[in-house]
Length: 581
Image (cartoon, rainbow, N blue to C red; front, side, top):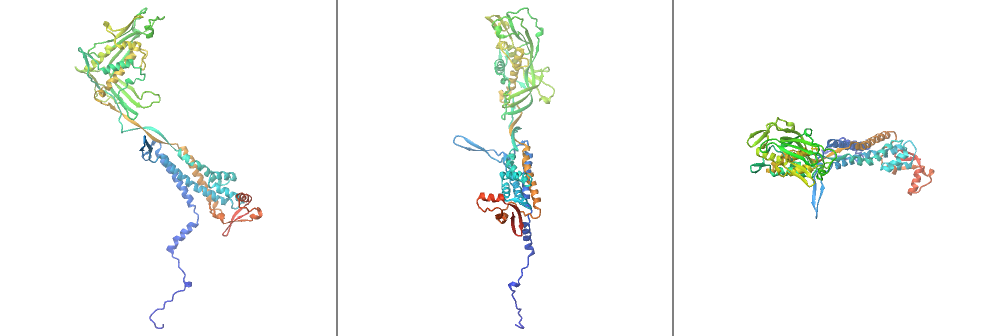
């Protein structure tokens, strides 16, 4: 309306409206669309990276565990459930093998992506610019899926095409998991167990109650029992000479431990014996202990005997040659012995678990009477053998007198042969000899330094038994365990056999080479990146098949016949995929 103050609004027509692009909202979409349309092989590259990461994780994990105890996360313990009659237990926790298996599975699955896609893509390169049979497409397709198809493809290509590398990678990938599993092994190794403390008996001062008969002191019954055990025990392993020990883990060691003991120093005095002209009967064996019986240390045991078979002498048999005499003189005295001990259950040689080695002996030339009731021994420091400064070793005077009186009474007597019916074990003054004389004469001792000498061997065994009893005295008296050592418990350790990783690394290398060859082949002009897609086959048009083959059946046999006789190339004309025969 003319002169109206209102402005007339004219709505635009639809045909006149032209939508304007929105840069900020459409550019990302265009970029995404462009990214999707361009094939950057991102999935294959990502698969190779993940596979390499899994293999590196396996390497670094096993390198950190090599010859080390099984990690705590891999040994969660046992979970037990009570059944009707038994308790069923199973191991809980994630084992190292399980972690390695998972990583190996990830690596293998990711490796198959570039291998399978590479074989599928190289199929199209194979038909580009060269004539090939349609049947070969099926061979390529089977090779991208498994080992049998890969073998057929290698045979078909005569190992002269890049797809052969992918086929080899597919074949070797079958052994990927077994090789990864064989990387990890286990072995048991003793490790210091601070929760356990082993002990072995030791003693610095021998002080035990004694027995007195008319003011004559004798050793306590445990010493006598030890002496007769040494004489009569048939135990060739000498268990009776082992001190009390505690080792709950089955594997324990002790550093050298000094302990008071009784030592014997024997010398051969055979050369000083004056041989009689003939000895058909008389004393065959004489043994005596010299020195005062009450308070003199040390004791000496002198012996002389005919070196003949005791059984033959008992039958009063004659011998053609003059028998030899054997004579010795043994001195028994207080001493300090440093012993290194170990306990190992189930030794390979079936020997006793406990074993000790005498590393050093200190005799007592400097022993002195401290007072009327004790003897003391002191030696220079020797930390290497366990002897520390200001350590005093000794014997209670009464205990020592009783002990050495018992030794004198034991090693005193003779064996006399007067005829078949006259065999006497006796002592001076007509007193009956101790059983030790008979045991030494008739015994067959082993396990000593000089087994050829009956007396010195017997004396050595007796001192071992007595020293063992002396070491056990604190434990027997008040339960003192002794000296602590080190306990070891078996712990599973991880061992890696590195050569088993060669095949996984080789397969990864084959996958990488296959991928690079695929990318290179696909960069040729006229090659489309179709990989294993079936869409090109769905839309493919086969040209001139009927004229060349003359078969159009749909059965599998007919299809195989048609594929085997149809040879051509794949080409793209505009929007049409063609197989030109």
